[in-house]
Image (cartoon, rainbow, N blue to C red; front, top):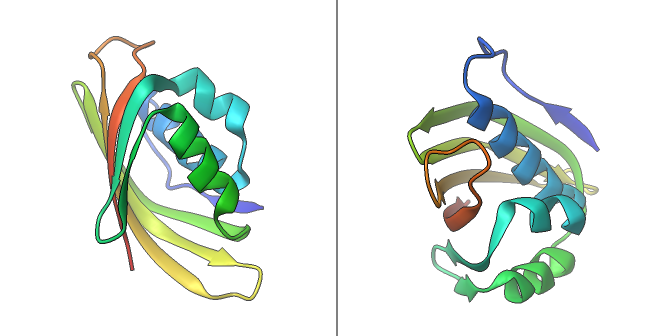
Length: 121
């Protein structure tokens, strides 16, 4: 999968975590996600579903179409929250635009993600 990430000052560790996590979602790399997701994660996919627990999230991710290209437009972080937007292309080159808002358990560097709210267009 081709991944395009905007340049950053390198001063925000969560920037890398967020891009790694969203890339892992598109790569279906469950081991990376289990490292960063809390067991009781809640992922609200606006207009579609609310997933509760890492098992539900895993099932949803494994059922999603394969991503060919992932482009991040921006990644923002502040305290225990972060967000990213961009677009992905599947193998048929159909585009999906996304925006994710992530909430970590705390502002600590090793804090797990406890909530995600996502928009797909």
